[in-house]
Image (cartoon, rainbow, N blue to C red; front, side, top):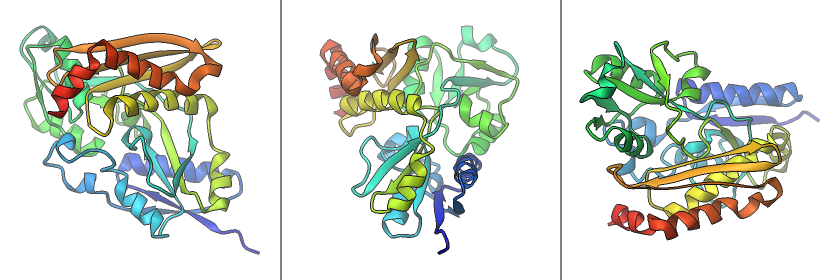
Length: 302
């Protein structure tokens, strides 16, 4: 009996294809047959609007979800930070790959003199925008959309001083320029730097195959971060950063919620025993909400 070929669904950007081929290579190393199926997402097609005006939740994953439900693909590979915290019925998370660099970086043009003066920075992320304005309240932030390559090109074409990117995205496709600085003060998006593989829950063969790729430490840390996000957002897009890391026998968590203009910030930093991770994200989110976060969220929603 011939083994079924696992159809790997992916967006067709260079970064998405890098992620899909990474999963393909890992599965084939385990003896599975695979093929890549490219699908264009709505988020890639509409580049004029900021993501948060499009009802960002699932904009990059929806088309792959539909393809899986319709039986056109068996598994889908995503940047985990793009995936809604609630998956569609019938689709399950089966593997999180080991996380790469989780940090944000600023790609700049000539020099960094502008950091002390008036400046224009570009990003399509509410989280990056709010944190930048929190630190540099005199700066202007412009909207920047598109895949990594088109965003780098837009930075070159516009008279912006710099643009913010995820380090992992640029590293994966060898596009990280020398003229960058690591924004070690910026709290990353929940699950930034991690790749997730989702499967149709009725497909026992693909579920069993993909489970073998899971990296337990990354799965636990991203679980905490995404639970924090889910409790805070409640279906609304907001500037939220979260990072969980293993430190010896503990998980150290840092999270924050910002107002849209970056002026207000409620943050938390807390450690817990590894074995107690299950509701840790929820507990941290509730502390944020009770410490002024509810009021910030109400302003964002209204």
